[in-house]
Amino acid sequence: MKTEIIRPDEIARALKVLRAGGLVAFPTDTVYGVGALAFDGKAVESIYLAKDRPIEKAIPILIADVDDLSRVASSPLPPMAVKLASRFWPGPVTLVVPKLPTLPEAVSATDTVAARVPDHEVARALLRESGPLAVTSANISGGPSPATAEEVFQQLGGRITLIIDGGKTPGGVPSTLVDCTGEEARILREGPVTMEQLLVAIHSSRE
Image (cartoon, rainbow, N blue to C red; front, side, top):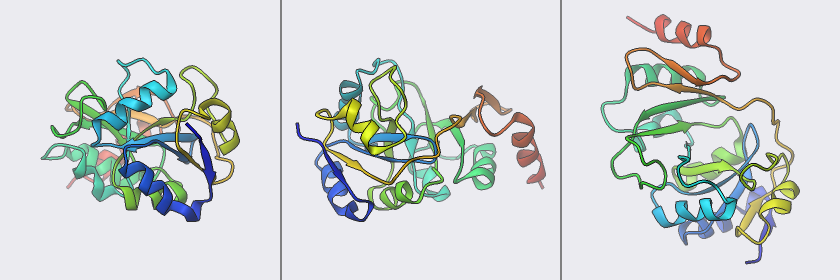
């Protein structure tokens, strides 16, 4: 497979690849991610193959805007998730919510799914056109997280179709992962947003 590196203004080419079941890497506010259409089970499965990723690891979903959460989460949305999304998206908070039953098992074999709106305009421009994408870091599993298109190519060249070169990503700390499926927020992975900040957002927006 030949892997091409394209400019951010060539999103139409990326959409064509995604809609054909292919994989596209692109920059986010943390690192470069590699993604497939979230509702295309076979395409999502190919992410595991491209990355040599263990099959038991669920793949998070990136969405373009807060309102898109209802496209991947079952109704009614947890009120806590709605409050946190309104406060911290776009940004470094990933919310675990009840999964929409129509999402393929390749995204998550459980009844939950992790979702986030990245704070990166190239990523959001793509997501607005493509809809929800199943996205994980664009590296070989266990390899260094890529901050540039060239670093993606070094690891996944020949394994994916396209890489959108949006320049160097900020990198840094992964997003705070928050379980919103219980009565109280629970941090599953520490990140830039603290539990204190989460609680302030939850309680300050209560009537």
